[in-house]
Length: 306
Image (cartoon, rainbow, N blue to C red):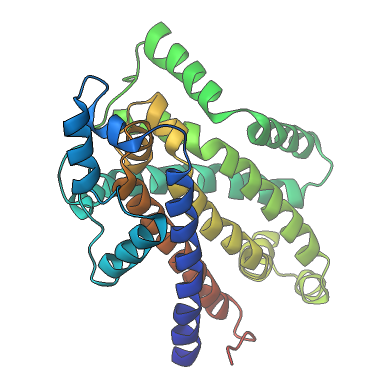
């Protein structure tokens, strides 16, 4: 097991290097002069040149890349060109907020998707099954920003039950979590239904029923645990997706997370912060994938890692 974990961690290094290299090149290929964006359009040419030298923007692109990798190996993500604060401080101030939102959205998605998938599988092609799968289709198709605005209009503007923007109380978390978790709930419901339908036709399930085991025990103890392996995959991947895909939700609800931070940084051409956010999210996504693989062995003892 430990050899497998170490090997997987080593394999993450090329993935992270590729992600960092990609974003390094993309942010520098954006149109416009980054030195002017940092200094301001009203800045004098002398000040713009000073900014260019200060942040190494006067160096050739390969030199900038090598310098960036050298600092990264030392744990230095650089200084934000917008706030003049270390990038690590910017990330650690915002990432817990995004993690809070992503976990809340995943809980919402699991509480809706897993029971809906189980009931749909137990009663296939029933009215509930058809209705839940139709709702799941709409959940996947509806744009996140539109759903967020509609929920805000209904529950904040019209009814006044929940705050529209900001963070601070549990009430502030409800609308962003529901908005972000809706699409994930739809995917989880469809995956749970499909996996449960496959497991319920297996011989050991039919044998348990023939022995007179109560249907509730058959569903929850015999079928659900074995059907949960692909669902765990979806849950793990969805958490990574929620962390990296919360940009629109955080922007709509003014949630102070890394999604909103990266939007602000892109608009300000804050290269170090954009690179730091991508590296943080890519590392988190890779670690989550590794955790999902290890959970497989707990759910199914037949799985062994060589």
